[in-house]
Image 1 (spheres, rainbow, N blue to C red):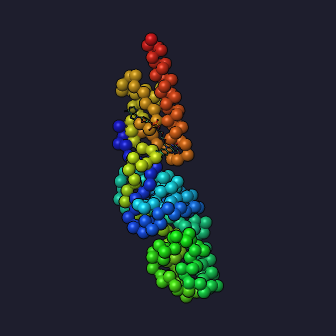
Image 2: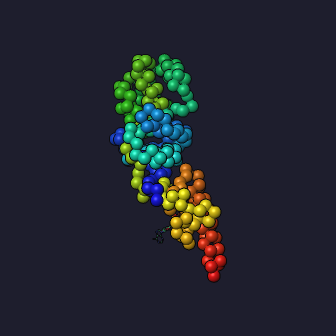
Image 3: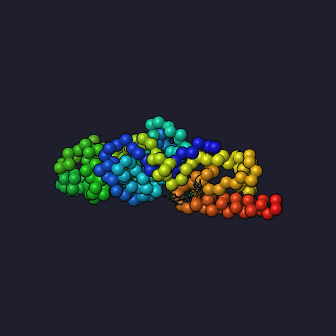
Length: 229
Ligand SMILES: Cc1cc2nc3c(=O)[nH]c(=O)nc-3n(C[C@H](O)[C@H](O)[C@H](O)COP(=O)(O)OP(=O)(O)OC[C@H]3O[C@@H](n4cnc5c(N)ncnc54)[C@H](O)[C@@H]3O)c2cc1C
């Protein structure tokens, strides 16, 4: 048996500010999983903040890659809130816009971010919320750009197998005959679905694997019974 572990689940993160964002869902963002400075996997789409960390479709897909890291340390997830713009383009755009308005930063940020993210964002960039944007220094603007492109969270662990959508690990495929789903070790024993060492990303693949292997295992077992009878 390949050691079972949760796959397609949420991440618990070290940053306590996520609690303030509980329930906030972000669309059209890019999330990247890192081990140290190495990019492991990147996903574009929708995610949601929870009281313990992050979840949602793109996080579930990243968690499959995380399951394959076997509890590596120094794992983080970086959210790019403006994936359509490069750092340089975003900086140029903000430089231009900051010159054109006297709005305070806290009143300007809702044009860039969901309103509920603004207080946390201000905390992270460490800039006085009432400063007029045309008085923001270059160094402060770079902090804003950097945080928009790399909202970083330290992954503490994936949520438990009980909460995960699918379990990685299970009966080793090397010990199963793929033509019949029969065990190569015990004749007359058939496997199907998640009990085997198979797991896939979201999109119906896990259900399809369960249906297909279940059908094949059932047909094979029935065939064996009728051939014995
Ligand atoms: C919240 C959630 C959302 C999901 N969404 C998707 C999705 O969108 N797309 C997708 O492809 N997959 C999805 N999955 C995964 C998918 O549901 C599973 O991969 C699939 O159902 C596995 O089928 P299975 O028959 O192998 O196992 P299961 O569906 O777990 O069936 C096992 C059955 O065995 C029974 N059982 C356990 N022990 C015993 C025992 N000792 N005696 C008798 N019976 C027992 C259990 O009660 C259960 O009914 C989701 C899973 C969850 C939890």
